[in-house]
Length: 70
Image (cartoon, rainbow, N blue to C red):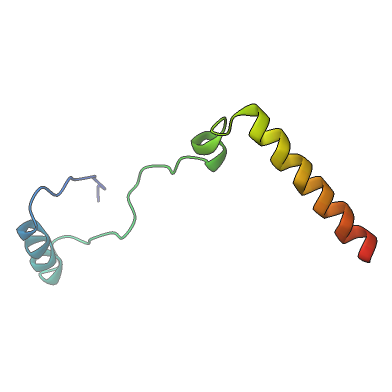
């Protein structure tokens, strides 16, 4: 068996794929075989440095307040 990736350009193609699956000719997989992009790669460097520093400062402050409560 071979797994391939296809691009659907028309809604009628879904019906054709379902029919082929009903005939047990193909099996439609729910996930693509492409590796997912890591979130750190996707969102890394999106915040300006000053906003990132302010956010990190707020996180540290909240974490310290939480630790003092325990």
